[in-house]
Image (cartoon, rainbow, N blue to C red; front, side, top):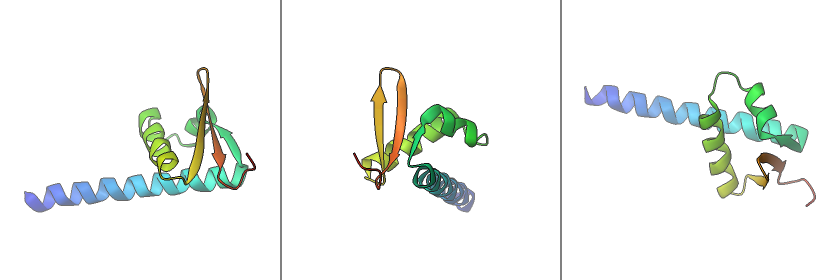
Length: 81
């Protein structure tokens, strides 16, 4: 039983890492992208999963997240501010 819990946790971590890698790659490719557009590009993940990953990436400084009213926009760190 204990190994199954560990396997599930490891699988979730790998999935999160993969999602984060997809997000960073997409943002670096486009330089600027809206969160809603990103959600449409990643149909295998929920809005909550994507937003959580985006929030983590922004806190780590791997992307820039800006909010204007109700819209969120993601920027590559290479994008001139």
